[in-house]
Image (cartoon, rainbow, N blue to C red; front, side):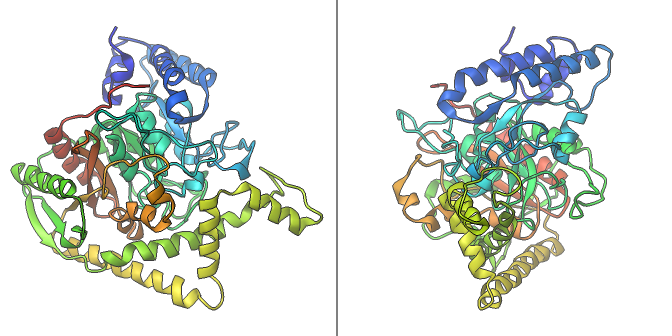
Length: 493
């Protein structure tokens, strides 16, 4: 039998329907891969092998009757930010020690309703705060990719580093992830996988541990554009428990794949050509432009003058919302509790010990920008800048642009414990330079693997779309995937 873990979701779906193998065989193949690889890669913080096998058996029973949902029998990994009933849900933070929710997030409920199988919970940056998956209480995730001829451990990007690494290393067929400022697209680019952040409101945020409520959005990471489309169709829904979720029909995203892009207008924003941008990122971008032009798309230059303010505005808005959202973690009702002489000291001790350095930094920044003397100077101003960023995109759509093509990241994956980045948080934050505008404007964005750099590491291209037009991103993304081919890391673990 072929290696079942090498299959895409689309291929596995057909094989299960044709009874070429069972969901239990498929699930066991992935559990075996996790047992082999997780010690080296640290992608999973908990593995639910027994639960996975039970779910797979239930799927096999359905498939035997010719029944089954869109993801029947497909083994997936779940980011530790999604509440999973009775299973470890700690946002990879010490402060949520031992927390196992009595409820299920809407996104994971949707996946289980469609027949998906849960392999376990995936590592991530603590409370989704980070660009390298090094802020996790459970230690860093290691990227399955390595530079040619090097043994150096590289980061998989963040915050959904566990999701991206697990998909790239064939430890699941696809994974849930979340994106607040690039946390789906940047890890996807660093690991040669496909990641889409849907439009704000496309997926319910209920049961997803909150970081910045006006920016957070769930989405999938998978091997191919088609697999991402299949997963997003199951994940997306309106939800009475989340008033920011949108009551719009969820399209059949897969139907967009393979459609011609002839006549589509693709915008190229000059403002994304950064000073000091590596030549290979510039060359990759040009390659993407040429591929789309060859496929019949019309390439147009567009202006997005407020792009340069996106990163500073994001790092005011996101920490402000985080400081408010994280105020609930106090050691009283659940999670870690560190005793003190009175309740105030207990709060202080619990939060001091429970939160990691990066989370503390962002809570402090957020509390500062929301404080009485600074609210107008910082938070209010950042929200006004956000409106201007959204207006830049609106003008592009009004001028007939169908999608925008940019690089996904300013570089390929960097080393774990890179001192240059760790000594200067702002340098680390610059990893989000191409991705934060999409969150600030609430738009959909996809990262598609587009090539390898000089060291043999994957690089991604980003497509940004109009609100709720993810179908266009899958349509155009497929052209890039077809032109670039597929990439897989060489197994060293």
